[in-house]
Amino acid sequence: MKLGVLALQGDFAEHGSALRRLDVEVVEVRLPRHLEGLSGLIIPGGESTTISRLLREYGLLAPIRERVQRGMPLMGTCAGAIVMAKTAIGLHQENLGLMDITVRRNAFGRQVDSFEADLEIPALGAPPLHAVFIRAPTIETVQPGVEVLARLADGTVVAARQGHLLALVFHPELTADPRFHAYFLRMAEQATTPGQEPVVAAGSGDPSRP
Image 1 (cartoon, rainbow, N blue to C red):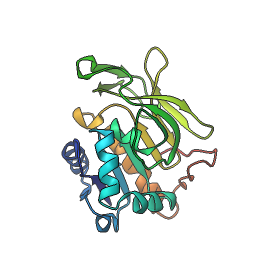
Image 2: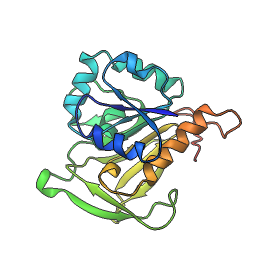
Image 3: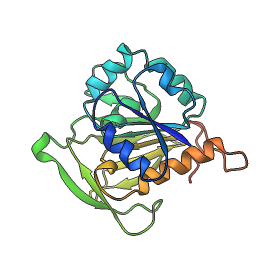
């Protein structure tokens, strides 16, 4: 199993470390050729405008879209969730536009408004997941076929899945809890292993689960 982490900007090193603790081979993706042979890709947190611009400048927008549309699992955290959303409020760059969600940039305010919260996530089981939110976006709306995985106490959606697409507005790589990286690894295994439950394409209206 070989997973990629987009390494143009942001906290890609922390994602790589989290995956290596799960005995996963990690590829830092900076050019289209680095996508070859990957079973999945993570877009990390960082600055969504910068990441989107660099995706275009390094010729990665179309190759990533093509591979994801063919079924390669994609996980975006914080800025990564903005980059993969079909509607990104406040982002004035072309993004991947792959997941049927609306995400609002900097929805909680500036850096000083960052916070942490414990999330009940049935897909991960007990105990609650301690989540770190840094200049976090929110998932404002989800379309049919998108499964909400986690909400804040006020009902704000902070994690969602659509088939082989996984969007989190917090930073699972900044804690010692490996469950979301392990969850994404299972998604990648299901997408590539014959006989496993198939991963449903985005927009099908029937999301699968690990």
